[in-house]
Length: 290
Picture (cartoon, rainbow, N blue to C red):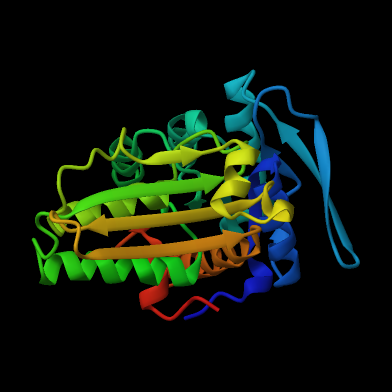
């Protein structure tokens, strides 16, 4: 059974941030509606507008200064839109766990695109509450396929890179507070492939200063929105080198992936799926990415 996309309504938590706007516009472009309230971070305005083509939606924003008001806002949107409501979260690493607890308490389906926070705790709260969710550090279809391939490689050929030293460099816009979730996920696969000890928390080199980003090759017009990653693996004697890169400018590829995830979740809810917590690899494997 499929849920027609016109019935789905997205509560875009993280507006008025750049990703919130980008996803909001992608939702409108693809026939989904936006809820009239959303959660936001401290010190944000009381409201904003999302415009795509002829359509403009006014959204009232509720900050974390009064957490009970945020929980109330979720309840209001559930009462207004019923089972059509899906939350999308692109907020801040510090908000990941408190937000997940609110979503789980309300049993409101959600797509978590924000990286950071305590992932194990988030998974447990979501699973224990039987809330439908897609939780993923990356929403870009091709990068998800890239990640899945290395996951399979590590399972099929564990230790294939024993004795290799690894360097990981990632560059994102200066407003991204935490280390790349995608880089962290990839490091786990490379560690399973046997590279020399690489600490996922401390060994990834983060570039956030614009002058260093330009030196890394990032175009000037992408400084405010990009995700560049390079993984270099060198054999112990230095005679063999592998280099893997994925460089994204802008945010639109992620926004489209988020809408795919929302539609996928809508279908899972409608079909009464027993499995409730998914990754983007699940979305990709079922051919749901447009």
